[in-house]
Image (cartoon, rainbow, N blue to C red):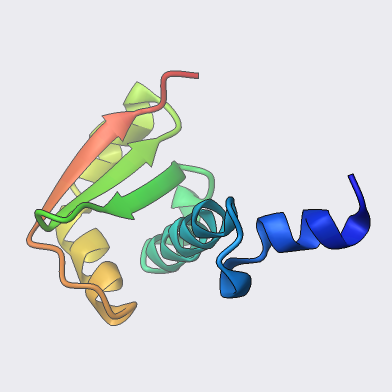
Length: 99
């Protein structure tokens, strides 16, 4: 595949086939980073990914069940961090990574 074809395929600004997926992954990565910044330093590595669903649920994927348990106590801080990032979640759900 030519370099220009690949760039077009992956570029979200040109309406590339995978552009929306790339854009969404970038947004989820930024949200995950924002949530991590809203927690104490000892929580580094606790969050694998995060997303806000259309229904307003903030879904946070924890690295382990132990981290999930600890993150549930931080739901208010996670919601506040998401709001500081410009989102408007109404609930926070913590899930455990399946990997």
